[in-house]
Length: 221
Image (cartoon, rainbow, N blue to C red; front, side, top):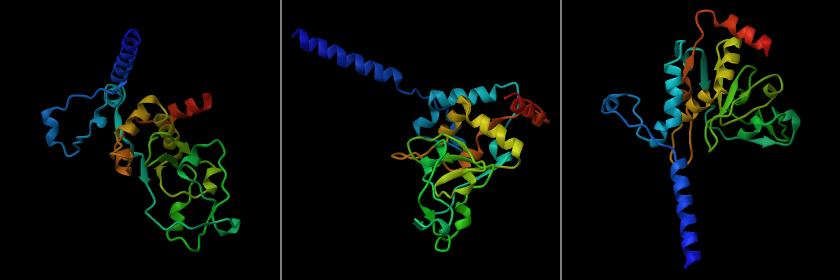
C-alpha cells in the first residue's frame, strides 16, 4: 500500500510539473474580433510571444515592419531532380543543412531539367529561416560559401541594403526576434511560416541614421 501511494504521489508531481511548464495564453479581447489579422489558435497568444511584442512596443526606439527593409519569398513548388554529376548544376542542400557550420552535398540540381532553376539559387546577403517543421526560428546568413548552393523549401529574407541585412540578422538572433518569428507560425500538425508572417514582424529601429550606430557595433565586434 505504501509503494502504491508513493507511485501515485510521483505521478501527481509529474503532472503538476507539466502543467506549470505548459504555456499560458493571453486573454483575447472582444475588440480583437474585428481585427483583419485575428488569430484564434491559442499558441499565437503564448505568454512568451506577448512579452516579446510588448518589449518592442515599449522600447524607447520606434519600430517598423521588416517588410519596409526586406523582401521575403519561398520558391514555388517544383519537381526537383538531383544527380551525382557535379557539372549538372549547383549542389543541393536540404533545409536543415543550411544551419551546419560548413555544409556539403554530393547531389546536384539538374539545371537543364528543373523549371525556375534560378529561383533555387542562394544569393549573398540573403537570410535563411525554415518555412515549415518543428524547429522554426533558426537563421543563417548567406555568405560567399553558401551562395554556391541551391535549396527549395526554405524562407529567403532579402534585405534591401547590406547594412540593414546585418542589423536584421542580429535582431532575428535575439530572444525577442526568435519569439516573434515563432509567433507567426500556423498549422496544426506541422508548423508553417509564410513570407507575410516574417514581413509583418515589428523591427526596433534606431533612428534616422542607424547605419552609423550599426557600423560602430560591427567594428567593435
